[in-house]
Every structure is written in C-alpha cells, then in structure tokens.
Image 1 (cartoon, rainbow, N blue to C red):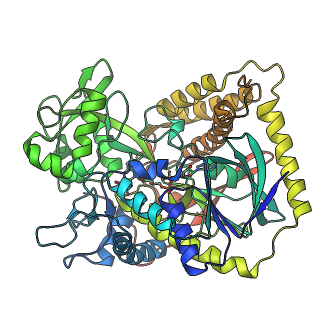
Image 2 (cartoon, rainbow, N blue to C red):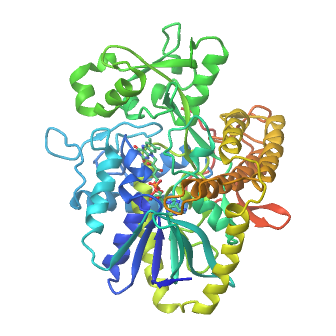
Image 3 (cartoon, rainbow, N blue to C red):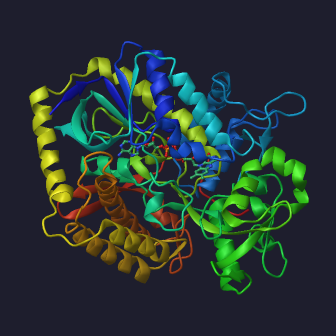
Amino acid sequence: MDVINHDILIVGGGGAGLRAAIEISKSNPSLKTAVVSKVYPMRSHTVAAEGGSAAVLKEDDNHDLHAYDTVKGSDFLADQDAVEVFVRDATREVVQIERWGCPWNREEDGRIATRWFGGMSRKRTLHAADKTGFHLLHALFQTSLKYDTLMRYDEWFVAALLVDEGKLGGVLALDTRRGVFSILAAKAVILCTGGVGRMYAFTSNAGIKTGDGAALAYRAGAPIKDMEFIQFHPSGLLRTGILITEASRGEGGYLYNKDGKRFMENYAPSKMELAPRDIVSRSIIEEVLAGRGFEGPYGSYVQLDLRHLGEAKIMEKLPMVRELCLDFAGMDPVYEPIPIRPTMHYTMGGVHTDKDGKTPIAGLYAAGEGGCVSIHGANRLGSNSLTELLVFGARAGRSAAEYVPISKPCSSERLQSLAKREMDIIQKRYMQPGNGKEKAGAILADLRKTMDEKVGIYRTDDGLKDAVQIIQRLKERFTGIRITQQSKVFNTELTGAMELDNMLEIAHVIAMNARIRKESRGGHARKDFPKRDDEQFLHHSLVFKTPEGPKRETFPVTITKWKPEERKY
Ligand SMILES: Cc1cc2nc3c(=O)[nH]c(=O)nc-3n(C[C@H](O)[C@H](O)[C@H](O)COP(=O)(O)OP(=O)(O)OC[C@H]3O[C@@H](n4cnc5c(N)ncnc54)[C@H](O)[C@@H]3O)c2cc1C
C-alpha cells in the first residue's frame, strides 16, 4: 500500500482542525503538516454555527465571571483548571480571529458588539449577524491558505488509526474520489472530527457528524469521556430539527405556550428564556406533557416569538433565522411566531484529553467538539463551543508541534503490517459481506428511533436498559450488512457503513453510561433519579474498549475556586 509521510496529520477541517493547522504552520513551518477531511473544509459543521462565540472583552466583565458561568452551566462537572485556561485564552483568540478576517458585528461607537446568550451573566457573545460559523471558518480557511507547507487531503475518509505499542504511527485513509486506501504516516495525529449528532433522528447536526473520531480513538485504545452527556437545544424548527439560534432569544425573543404564557417564568424566573439549554429544553417538554403545548401534524411544539423585535432588527441581527423559517417552514418570523421543539444539538463528551489536547496514546491529540477536556461538563453554554475550537485547536496544535521533533517515526514495515490488519477488517466487515441481507439504512433508522425515544432529554432505567439491548442487537445485525454499490468512485455506501459502525460503537457507550449514572446533572436527566448526587457521581466517566465490551472507569473532576452548589437560575 502507498505510504505518504508527514510529521503531523489533522483529521478534520472544521474550526478546531484549521485552528490547529495554522498554529503548527506558524510555530514550526518546517513540519510537514496536512489536514485530512471527509468533506471540503468549508463544508464542516462549523460553517453552520449561527449565534456567536463567547469571550471577555468588555469592562463590566472578567475572566472569573465567564469561568463561573461556565462551571455553573456545566452543573459543576467541568474541570475548573481547564475552564480558567479557556476563558483566559478566549479573549486573545477572538481578537486574533478578527485580525485574520472574521467580521465581528460592531457597536455604534465602533467597538466589537456582544449579545446575550443562555446562562451567561454578561453580554459576552461576539457574533457576525447569525452567520458566525461561516465567517469564523472562512477566516480560518483563508488564513490556512497562506501556508505553503500545509497540505490538504480533501474528501479523504480516515478509517483507522495505526498505533504501534501505544504510539501513534499514522492513519489508514480512503481517497473517496478514487476509492483507494493509503497509509498517511505521521508522528502525531490531532482528531478534530466533531460530534455524534446523526445517531439521533431529530437533530440540528450536519450529515457528517457521525462520531468517527471518538470511534477511531476508542478502537485504538484511547478512552472516551462523559459520553452520556448529550445537549438538546430548545429551538429546533418543527419537522426538520434545523437550528433556530439561541441568539433569537439573546436578542429578545419570547417563548410561549398555547395559553399565551411566557412559561419560563415557572422554571427559571431570573433568566427566563435565557436559562441554559438543558433547563429550557426540559421546560418545553414539561409544558407539552402538561397539555400546554400546541399540536400539529408534526407533533407537539411551543412558539418562539420574534415579532416584537421588528423587521429591521431581525434583518440586521437574525437574517438567517428568517431565511431558514421561510425556506424550511414556509413562515415569516417577522409576522408569525416560530414553531419549535428541542433538537439534539451537541456532544459534551468525546476523546479524553488534557488541557493541551493530549490523549493517553503518545502522539494522539484531540480538540473541538470531538474532544473532551472537559470545559463543558454536563451541559455546554451556548457560544462557548466556537471559542473552544480556537482555544483548544491552538493548544493541541502547539503541543503536537513540540512533541514531533523529539519523537521517532514508526517504521514503514510496521505501518504496512498494521494497515494490512485494518484492511482485512475493512474487507471482512464492509466490503465482502457474503450473503448478508441487512441494509445499513434500516439499521440506522432503528438506531435513531432508539436514541430519540430512549436516550433523549428524559431517561429511565427501563428505557436505557432497552436501548443497550437494542443497540447490541443492531451491532449484531450490522455484521450481516450488504453493500450493493460496486463503483470505487465516491462509494457513499461504503463510507456510510463505516459511519454507521462508528455510531453504533459510540451509541452503545452513551446508553451504557447513561444507565450507570443514576443521577440528574446538566443534560443528563433521569426521571427515576431526579436529583444531582455529588457524593456518588461527581466524576467523569472514562470508557475503554475491551474484548468483553465497553469498560467504564471514573476520573476525578478538578475543582479550583468554585465549590459545587445548587444550580438555580
Ligand atoms: C446548527 C449549529 C449551530 C451552532 N451554533 C453555534 C454557535 O453559534 N456558537 C457556538 O459556540 N457553537 C455553535 N454550535 C456548535 C459548534 O458549531 C460545533 O460544536 C463546532 O463547530 C464543531 O467544530 P469542530 O471543528 O469540532 O468539528 P466540525 O466543524 O464538525 O468538523 C469536523 C471535521 O472532521 C472531519 N471528519 C470527521 N470524520 C472524519 C473522518 N472519518 N475522516 C476524515 N475527516 C473526518 C469533517 O470532514 C470535518 O471537516 C452550533 C452547532 C450547530 C450544529
């Protein structure tokens, strides 16, 4: 098999991946660095981010306040040392990204504008209208083009990590255009592969968010952390789950039940619509369960009303919200309230890393939504993720660039033998499925239904027990899948099967962890254990893959300044 040599490979061309790539290219241009991405970088999910990026800029704000809001938002599961690093680096990063071309909105007096976001005690969310992700990713992408030494493998799918005795040697990747597998050798690999949203049916996530990085790391022996914590965003557009940004509430939008009441009064009187997402999402479900939701052909919903903001403000601050409503719901938020219900949105867990993106495998790093430092704990505050991509993308890039000059590459023979082993698995599992009768699409539909119904906003022991069993059966069914597409060129049936395999692997861990965590914390709400239980569960979960199945360990939470307290808004 072809071997192409590099010093550092970054898997993922979203915000985290490109920020890491720039940092490496800037700090040590002599390193041979490449970004591998299964889609063209500008199609990464980061491009879809709407509302903004949080950082301390204004004089009424400070790093301790941002850190405390983040820790409280996380329901005290975030590592506070990591949060302190995050809020401090955040300020520098949002200024840096503007110098690279991100057009932040401005106040009248010319200073960078900020808006309110859920769970934040200050107005600290920088934004470029409601197309922040597009502008941020574009600024990173165009900056990355400056570096001649930075190579790209666009539309290459990473199928396995090649790890030799605990040390990273490279990846096995499929050039989807030619249908050819190659070894991309590297001393360090940074996984920036994003979240796992597509294992749910009702989600705001792009089609590429299939948990590949978590599955790659997990299979290679690295632990994945806190996977039970899934964020549901309160305002998914009815029918499609497309996101209506929290900025619409940040700019002053109201939530109404069918009695015309701003129901958040009953759940978070001090923050109202701007309580953190876990709380607002649960409140919507409670309203529906109490019979105060609207009913329609696409299920129950509540209304997000922007009419009082007026057309001028909507067009200036929320033009994409209007566009999405017109295109996907056939209604205009200038004149009508938007029908919404909670949509699966974000993966708090991911590949276990330290503050510099390091995993326990030498040479393997992770950053962005696919990594877990953890700064979000049990619930991420809106607008902390884009900033996280910048802060931890840069940190992972720096630490990989320092590691590479002092490490030795894996021999070519060894890489060939590791790759051969992986190719044999791929051949057997996906490409020669014998008489298999199973269709990947049918298994995926069953997985999504299971995750929506049993591993959603509210969870119970019975539901989670069922979910684990169903997922195990789906994994068995997967061994009988049949791929019918013969062409090697853009064989999306093959890549789809690999993605489904990844989702099944991770869904199993999510459901298992959720069942073991017999408490309610942040995004993980157990009907049968409605209280947070710090005595038994103030810890991270780490899960390792073993021949006997997933093995769970606990990992301490770092607490610096902020002792866990009751979380009220
Ligand atoms: C609709 C929407 C709106 C959002 N709005 C905001 C917001 O306003 N503020 C905020 O802070 N957060 C927001 N978020 C969250 C935030 O945008 C994401 O968490 C973040 O962009 C993830 O970035 P990333 O770099 O980790 O991964 P992504 O941008 O998801 O990129 C993942 C990359 O990995 C590559 N990849 C994955 N698997 C493979 C593989 N097997 N082989 C090769 N390449 C692979 C993909 O090609 C892609 O380039 C939003 C999310 C959504 C879905």
